[in-house]
Amino acid sequence: MPSLDLYVVVLNYNTRELLRACLDSLRRQTGLAFETCVVDNASSDESADMVAGLFPEVRLVRSPSNAGFSAGNNLGLAAAGWPKNGNARYAMLLNPDTVVPDGALAAMVTYADAHPDVGVVGPRLLLLDGTLDKACRRGFPTPEAAFYRFSGLSKLFPRSPRFGRYNMTFAPEDQELEVDSVVGACMLVRAEALQKVGLMDERFFMYGEDLDWCLRIKQAGYRVMYVPSVIVHHVKRAASRRSPKAHYEFQRAMWLFYQKHYAATTNWALDKLVRLGLMVRGGRRLASEIMGGGAPTAG
Image (cartoon, rainbow, N blue to C red; front, side):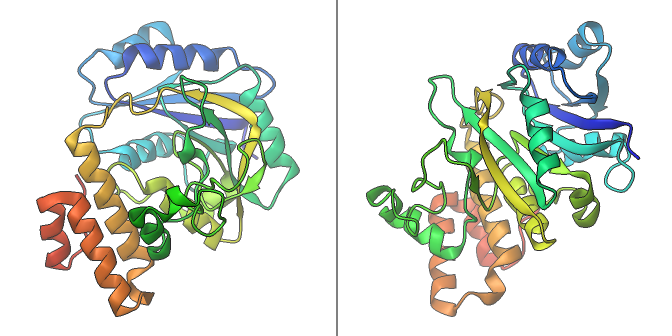
């Protein structure tokens, strides 16, 4: 049997002071046995040295390059034997720009223990202004959901379960809800589910990998739950800060997700609309990849 309740992977890229605050909040957690692993994606701000000096109890993995969100988190998981021989009953992905209130980790584990059919648990993520980070409870970006977003119908009718499906805007934020996906900024995954589906798909450099992981876990027979009674604070986009690369990677992730899960079963007309929308939003580089017909490469 695993010796720990929880194994937490924090993937860092040039967010040293936010990472310090995150690790301080983890250090105050009680009520469970857990280990924290920081994977540093070749930061230039001495983040890794800070962890080594101030948090000697933390497992530190220094990646020689920034290979992206999926690859970095996979390094952290593999360092403890995942996916087959992990050292805990649950694994968690946690962004360095989060602060975890006392008791939040134990509450998430307790919830998962009480619901053995749940493979993924996500908390209510609150931004600095106290509003909900909408990414913490989502529907999958199906072609229909993409159309509702691109056309503006999701904004016109946010309370509609049909048009508001992607960000679940039809449900109160304090309502516990089965969802398609939570967000990789803070997601707890059951060990057995991870063993069945494997690690994250490293073709996703940044964005979309959490959607893909949740879909694979649901396909393995588990539920994905948004649990708003647990609150975690999130600065959000501390590493990317809406850079042009981040914009491209988001659209590229949507293209990869569509190709992987929906393209083969989408009718001709809707497929053309999806491709056109992604080309317009993703710019010349993504348009050339889509027109080329192949799956986008990482990076």
